[in-house]
Amino acid sequence: MTHEGLTALEVLGVAIKSEIDAAALYQRMAGHVSNPTLVAKLDFLRQEEEKHRLMLEELYAVRFPDVDLQLPAKSHVPTVDDSAVEGLTAPELFQLAMKAEQLAASFYAEQAEHSRDEMSRVVLRYLSNVERGHYHMLETEYELLSRFPSYYNADEFHVGDALMHVGP
Amino acid sequence: MTHEGLTALEVLGVAIKSEIDAAALYQRMAGHVSNPTLVAKLDFLRQEEEKHRLMLEELYAVRFPDVDLQLPAKSHVPTVDDSAVEGLTAPELFQLAMKAEQLAASFYAEQAEHSRDEMSRVVLRYLSNVERGHYHMLETEYELLSRFPSYYNADEFHVGDALMHVGP
Image 1 (cartoon, rainbow over the protein chains, first blue to last red):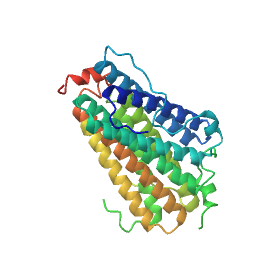
Image 2 (cartoon, helix red, strand yellow):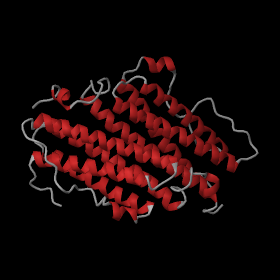
Image 3 (cartoon, chains in turn cyan, brown):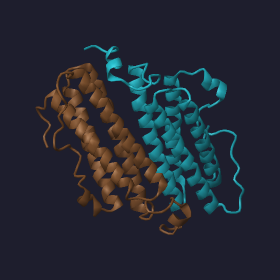
Image 4 (cartoon, rainbow over the protein chains, first blue to last red):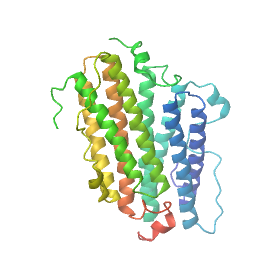
């Protein structure tokens, strides 16, 4: 999906749709892991995306008070189709979410550059930074769960259990 | 505070004390802001530090099952003295927390390098990455609240209100 030549109005539509899809992805991911630490992280990420949606909707209302918001059919978040997600392992879901956060961060940074009003620039840059932070958070967890495959399914991460997987 | 030449046992003591202090700092910070989005982020950070403490205590119990845990008087978290914190503004508290996260990330990275057992290396590297993520999260919020000083005190961040502070 190319974002070149999007109008300011279209940018906000794509952004809002993406935040909706991202929140849905985190909700699904939280249903796929049982470790409460990971569930808390995924719930936090979902809540952040929900707040971004509200922030963007408000920006839309301020900038285009007379135009009804129309969401595009597709966001830049990779597929969150229920059946596709169902077959994925936890590490695969993390990779999917990482890809989505990377795309979102790039999209916001790029659109902030092209934005003509200062308010949009500030909000889009902020969102770009937050999504990049999400990417790194996911990456850190992904590394641990690649190392200890039982991490996300365990009731809790136990150093003692994990010891069995590594050398002394 | 220098960390050179700490024993593996001392490293864990310093780390646990720092996580306790970091959690206390976030609890105090949450009491200083009223914006629910920021409060949610600070609560999340506090919970993360509490989980790190448990992870480190478990690592301690596995590595030193026969030695009672003794915490040092000081952590590497900058002062979280109640009276000192009381007089600080929200941006100053964020700077304090950013400094603490930076020190924690460096400390864990450095100690992971020096650690002789693989399990400690994995846990310390993981904690270093998570704390670096916290630093970036705080930095992103700090940038927004530097730009919109009313952000942390508002009931919510409103794009419309923020518009008053920037040009068209």
